[in-house]
Image 1 (cartoon, rainbow, N blue to C red):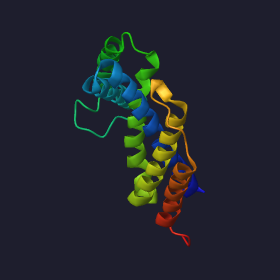
Image 2 (image 1 turned 180 degrees about the horizontal axis):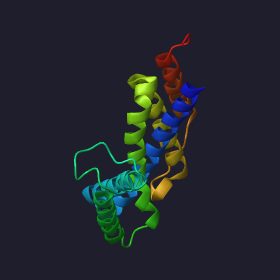
Image 3 (image 1 turned 90 degrees about the vertical axis):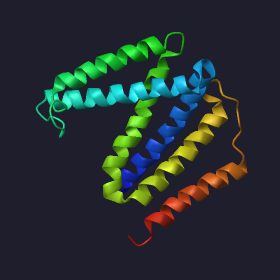
Image 4 (image 1 turned 135 degrees about the vertical axis):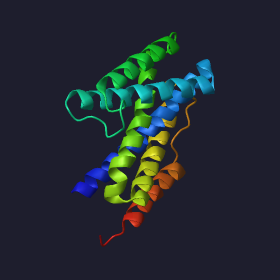
Length: 173
């Protein structure tokens, strides 16, 4: 049961990577690719600062050397990155503020799930989820992208990736 939930989480993380890619494409068209990457990285850093700051405030400080084990460092980082995000997103869809959280989910998910289910299984499930998410984003023309209709051949490709996850996991485990 734990492995099944871990696999579902890895698939969802991969799907989120496709959503992030769609958002980055839209931001890149509006501001430029490097600027889109910068805004996404700021969001990742802000999300991580919030997580580590909250942990430190509740008495579970990060296992890092001083002063990186103090809540105030992460509160300051969260405020600084949030300010950068607010300025950088002016004139863009405010929903782009979450783009980096998908990257954060991948990083934390890899650190959490890969040791449990194995690197190959985590990566194969995340890639399968990413392709399923990408086909979904293409089908709906997410965030103003061109529509690329899901064809039977693309569905077969997605099914084969899911079969690959099963094969990487192994049938008798």
